Image (tube, rainbow, N blue to C red; front, side):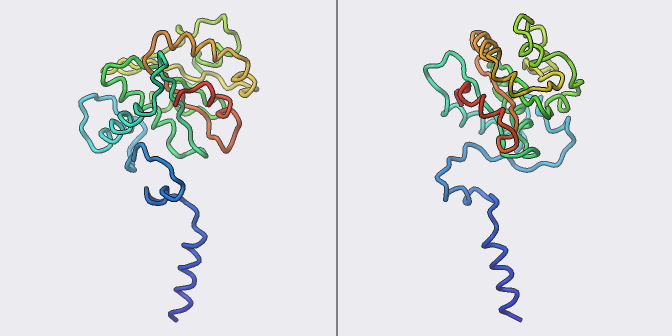
Length: 216
């Protein structure tokens, strides 16, 4: 009666390869730049548009913003920050949006780009139609004026957002056709921070193509 439950519990812990806490990361010599507590709210309530908000959640995003600054390249005129995850549903889009709002709340000029061309989620948090003109239109034709597709959905914070736009049949080809390099080069001249919300790394190859275009 003692041995059987002990063996079962031991095997459960032995084969558990998930990350449960900060301590689990110490075995891999990884740096933790922020810890966001779990919060069960509606999609609109998860976006912290109030720059004066002092809740635990909003402060955790401010701490993330402060720590991200230590990863910046000092020789860059503007910093491009890529936000990704391993699989979908881990919160990368929400983290990208709130990180962008955190930088915006301290007076930085920020552009948030929805670069998940396969399963975009950014539009859901700002109540926009996912088929509005956005990044895809410029990637298809670089003669398109991408700045005209920028939206600013928040009243209290001046955050520029470029949604991904209509779903393309060839997202990887569009990301690698060179047009996004032109966009980032132009955006670096205008913005202090450019934050890219990309696709999950273990599901598609899109994000791998974006990593060498990013500073962080």
